[in-house]
Image 1 (spheres, rainbow, N blue to C red):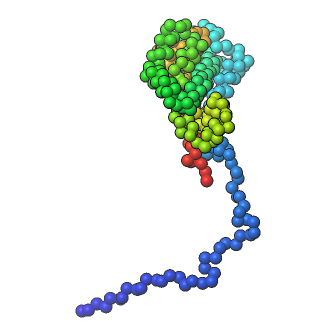
Image 2 (image 1 turned 45 degrees about the vertical axis):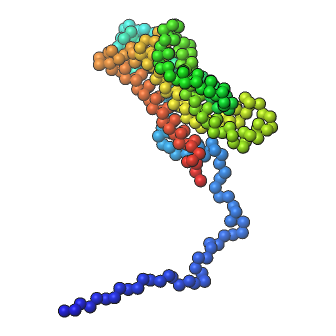
Length: 323
């Protein structure tokens, strides 16, 4: 039996053109050229993108909290409970956290709340000073090498390569063994070699910028070399510099904590987070609070700096600038 099949329908043609098809939207006179998006500078736009990064904002809040705790914690403890970081109360040895001792006490009766925040002062101070030394030395050294180029660049960067090849902690340990361990010695030891990474970063950025038009114009106008580097070139590489600094501070804090852990840190009775961890790790199974609080403070600070550094890296990337 034959089956009748319906013929396929022809495809629909284009819509019929009418006089009102594709008519432009009505725009009042003068509105076509109006700027509806607010004018933002690079740093304003970077701050907007930074605020949109929730993890970076959490890191920033944690950094502010740790900084305020380090500044005000020992003061509050002294005025509220009368505790100082070096007072030894042998009647209250190894006490757990309580209303009298908020973080408990250590093996010789010292208040851990005061010592943890006092240790935060020392650790943050070492990290910030090490970052500032890296900023000053690294930016100047790398900027001069990248701008001058040629034989000067070759000699300066070979020096950097030699220093970069020496293990950082090994050099610091050798200096601390030769010199007396202490806060100035730790900062000096970190400052001697900590700037090489910044110098290489700045030199690479300067090599990209030195042939641009604004640099050539400054040369024609007779701008001095140091003024050209500091006023024209360095501000254009502040984004990578700031990101590197936020990652340098936790590295310096962790380096100091490691040195204190092996006994080459801040001498007693002062203590950093590394010193407190070193004193408590052998008894952390018996009195865990002596280890937990300084380790938690160090971990929070490391996380916060890394989160802020990642947020700055994304916010200062000109390729991600909002359109």
